[in-house]
Amino acid sequence: MNDLRCPLCKQPLYTNSQGMACDNRHQFDRAKEGYFNLLPVQHKNSREPGDAKEQLLARRQFLEAGFFGALKQDLQALMPKQTQTLLDIGCGEGYFTRGFAEVLPQAQVYGIDIAKAGVRLAAKSAQDKNRHVFAVASSFDLPFADHSMDVITRIYAPSKDAELWRVIKPEGLLVIVTPADTHLLELRRRIYKDVRAHQHPSAPAGFVACGQHRLQGDLIVDSPALCAALLAMTPFAWRLPEALQAEIVATGIKDSFDFMISLYRRS
Image (cartoon, rainbow, N blue to C red; front, side, top):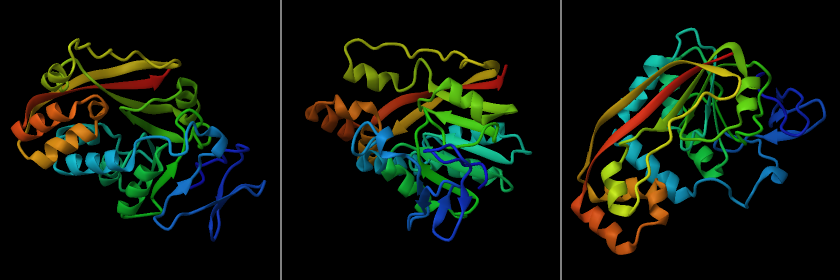
């Protein structure tokens, strides 16, 4: 894990019996679930930043049911076989991070998220806690060494362009997934009077596009529990009146998924 650096002083982190520490004696213990907390308290914007535990559990329930399995498989196929280091930004409960590790058995795979509840869930499900490292950390101040990542993935997560550029290797691959125009369009029409089109991503500063494609398909959810999970894992949960939420859960969801997958290299 020599790719990590101290979030306080930016010096390299080294493993020890308790977890990791830098030469300035900043110590970061490994939690019992196997993750590290690399988010200094002064970098938090709230007591428990990021998605709530209930939202993350709903996400796990829905994703493990396979509804976005096509996206996982598409992303797995994009992973260069020679990858030695991969960083998944905004890993949540780790569904896609585990998918990357499945096809990169030789790689050191890192997943970070600002939500401790998500990182805890991800770390508990990691099969190899030395090769799959999860950490609570900020995507705007990445606790990684310069030019340390062969691949960086960012699925529905924010980041800072300069940090992506700093951490990725000169020949590295940046993969960004965003919602495309018709993603959950019927559901959005039921919730919002004015449905706005998703913005198409532009290349992060310091990067050039090297590929882009859309992944589309039908999304039919009949199970009330899984309908409720889908609603709970999205921003819709905060805007849905109880009566409409109950109606959607009872009648099911017939919609579509639509993802934009964009690939970039350093310019």
